[in-house]
Length: 236
Ligand SMILES: Cc1cc2nc3c(=O)[nH]c(=O)nc-3n(C[C@H](O)[C@H](O)[C@H](O)COP(=O)(O)O)c2cc1C
Image 1 (tube, rainbow, N blue to C red):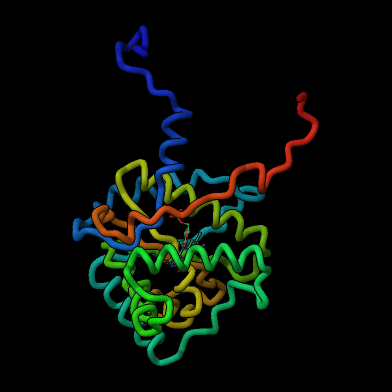
Image 2: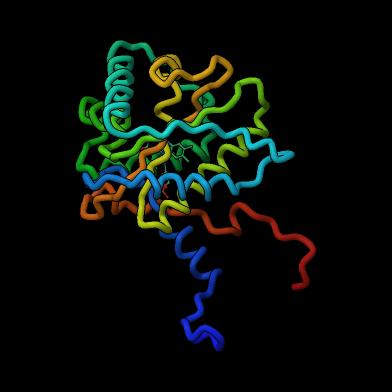
C-alpha cells in the first residue's frame, strides 16, 4: 500500500513487530564484526522504554567489549574451572514433570545441532564453557538488580531484556540471554566494580550471528495459545 501524502510504501507496524518477535532466536555462534557503540546506545534507549512497577526502572546493565570483555571472560572461566561458582539456583528440585520434559526436548535439539551425544559429558561441558566467552560475540551484557527489591521488580528487568533483544533483532543484531553467568556474581561484581547492593541476574551475548552455524538453525517449538491461555467471557 502507498501512503497518499508521502508516497512511501506504508508498513503495517503489527506485521513488523510480529516479524521481529517471531524471528528472534537465541544465537550461540557470532561473526567477528564489531558492534558500533552508537548502535548499542540506541538499543539501550529502546530497552529503557519498558514498563516497570511505579516506573522504578530497576534495571542495571554492564555492557562490555574489547579488553574489558576479555578480562571478564577469563575471570569467569577461571572461577568456573576452580569450582568457585554458586550451585545453579534457577531451577527447583524436583522440577515439575511438564518442565522437565520440555527441558529434555530442548537439550536433545540443542546437542543434536552441535553433533554432541548426550552421553558425552566432556563435550557438553566444553559447550557450557562457551557461555563464559559470550559464544564469541563482540559484546557481552551483564544484567543486575538491587538485591533489596522483590521478585516483582525482577519482572521489570525481564521486560527490559526482552525489549533489548527485540530492538537488537530489528537492527540486524542477535542475542543469547544467559543465566549461566548468575552463579559467578562474586567474580563478576569484582571485575565490574558493582556496588554491594547489586546482584547479577543473567548475562547476554550481543553481535551479528553466524547464520550458517548449525547451532543457530535449531528451531525451538512453542506451545500454542490454547495450552497456556484461557479466554473467558468472549462471545462464541
Ligand atoms: C532468562 C534466560 C536464561 C537463559 N540462559 C541460557 C544460557 O545460560 N545459555 C544458553 O545457551 N541459553 C540460555 N537461554 C536461551 C534459551 O535456551 C532459549 O531462549 C530457549 O531455548 C528458546 O529458544 P529461542 O530463544 O531460540 O526461541 C536462556 C534464556 C532465558 C530467557
